[in-house]
Length: 262
Image (cartoon, rainbow, N blue to C red; front, side, top):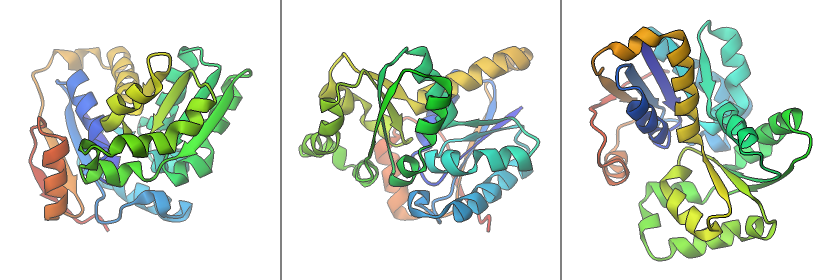
């Protein structure tokens, strides 16, 4: 049993990391489409095409289950991928919505890239499933380069977080969806800004829980196996990404392989 995970870059490694922790007996393959990032500024047609390429590659590697770790691809391409591929498909948006519903939130905030917020994916799904809920969204595209370049470790990250999230704080939200797989890397800082009264919904953690529950029911014998290997593929392996990965994911044990999926 192989689990395939794809993202536009390295943010999805937060999902990879959480799934690796919860499912040590499953082989996991991660694909970061770093040559064509960011997906967040591209059209739906382009993201659909990239997503199909990614799933085709992972399927060719023998993956039995696909995890869409990119919020933009989840927003634009989940339904298309489900129609085109006869595989179980998990996406970060559905898992985030499920967690929001369980939290009994009434004033929900959602932050993400510009494309994720503009797609209204979270809003549309939530309003179909919850009648009495107020949803407040905010695009925070600046967070991604801050995280990738390690700038969140500097003193001025607090001012940037405050500048971007002050409006949501004034809305008195009780829960917040971290609608980008990069954002869990600054989860502590966001939590400090909002305080304990705001429940943070971590897309990486939620999708790993959803996947675990599905596999425990449908493939219980797989949990009895020995620890399986992890593989990471990138479509562009620059020195920049090597340094970023080392800074942000110090404890991950994997070898990076460069591939071309065009």
